Length: 255
View 1 (cartoon, helix red, strand yellow):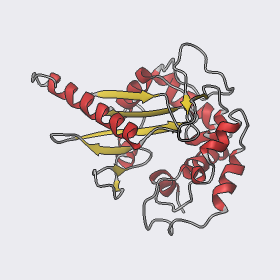
View 2 (view 1 turned 180 degrees about the vertical axis):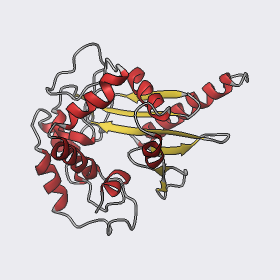
View 3 (view 1 turned 120 degrees about the horizontal axis):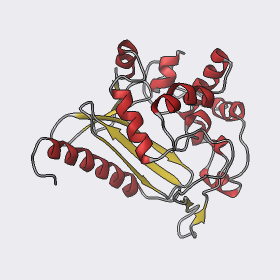
View 4 (view 1 turned 45 degrees about the vertical axis):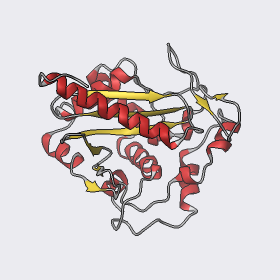
């Protein structure tokens, strides 16, 4: 199993989130989860396929990448993100949280643990349940700035960026493909956008950017408990925003 397979979701590792029910997290959102325990939870189950023979999204791979970063550098993955991404790009609203409180103005996150159940405020939650797979906090502005800088080559050397953007099909009918921690999806009328989705207790986010300088980020503050329509609407809003930016840039009327 290679680091590339971990980042491209071709490792076949079971996803620990398939075996950690959101309802269990909602019952005790402040509980601390050890990264190794989450990895062990996944490894209690058989692999989805042999490494390199298929594609299946696994958050376990990102936990292992975080552990590799710490072993290789001697520093936490959060410290490496601050040094290599946050500080160079002056991202003032982006950080790897150490506590459960979200400082500054922010939307509150809600979960609906069962059909017909009342909404629960889960804004305060231990970030350890996401770890290197999704514990970061940011703003739409900062996410857009990060994606723009990444695609402009401000964070990686050209050869490295080419590796990140070398994709393989995921098998989804919508044509999405996956590189190294970065996904491409087709836009209406042609072209691609690059980005990622993010789901965390209380929130769902989708962000994308194009190589010609368009960026957009959309977010809703409900999960779990949302319907499939919520994710579909997020993607539709993102595609519309990026297409509108393209139309405006070309002088055509925006939809």
